[in-house]
Length: 165
Image (tube, rainbow, N blue to C red; front, side, top):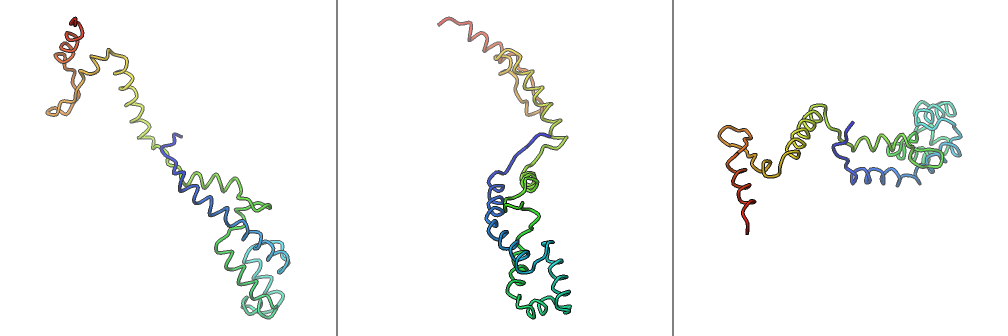
């Protein structure tokens, strides 16, 4: 597909936002593994784990009884901002996320636009293949709303070039 435009500035801003969360990614992973000791690093898995340990159905109350309320609230807060699946084990943004982000800020030509541009390029190539004076004699006629070849203009230009100074 033909790229129409790529908004690099908006892409770089979005990329910086993702990269700025690297420290928070490590904190979130550490909370899951060290404080809550669970492998699956999702809020759902954490809430199920808290319910299982405490016997309470309310996760906030369960975390409070286990003296992990601050950590639980921090996990909830960070999980709203961060999707751990977007980051690799080193905390870097995954290449699949980078590709999707780049795609988000890329605009492509539609098939109709590609067809129109190809037709325009054919016309431009045809005009470029003729003599410069003849090409300049092609003008837009406002009454008929069409391009016309003005032979009188071309002949005047040719006569002017033949004059000796």
